[in-house]
Image 1 (cartoon, rainbow, N blue to C red):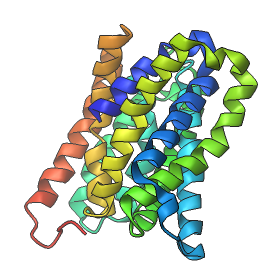
Image 2 (cartoon, rainbow, N blue to C red):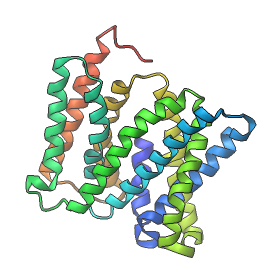
Image 3 (cartoon, rainbow, N blue to C red):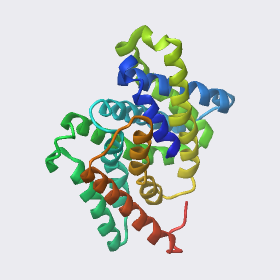
Image 4 (tube, helix red, strand yellow):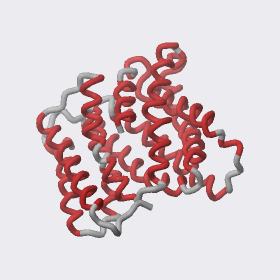
Length: 271
């Protein structure tokens, strides 16, 4: 989470040069190249059924990245991540079997409600919030598709999946930024963003998805809004309002509540 959100804050600093779609193309394109070089997926023959699962994972991954960066054009990083959490929150709710979990999830919903434009906060752009919600939907499918793809082989799945994601998003980036993507300073920062935001953390997440059940993974990832807000404050100087920090605290507290309860239940081990 620290790696992802530090990279996201760095990526947002590139928006004035190549736009949100251009940054997405750099991040995903470089990540695909790095992961392919590391994992060398061409050494293995992937069955057609498994390749279909990996392709779905890649399409969802590309859409999640593009929609998320588009949302950052108009709303703060910490707020975007908190709204995006509606995806893993939905996964956690769908897999919940304990009534007390609903109280914690309700607290997270309250936090999300405080961030939405309907709450009366003029600081939240409706279009940006809608894009973050769409990214959250992709995040939910990413969790589900990532678990299925990860059963093939973690490194193989993430390298092929990221290559599919690059095929999805790079055309959007080229259409928006053109040759500006090839400027040496842009390429240097884009490479750093790719390592921090995709190559390293997505590899770690793929291995985590093979060892954790969906709910555990989802609720632990809900700590990310607070990490994102702190990264944006340190790198971009973005300051959240008191109400927005309260909303982030609701999401994080809900995550800690569910995670701590699951940690004391011996029947809920990692998969």
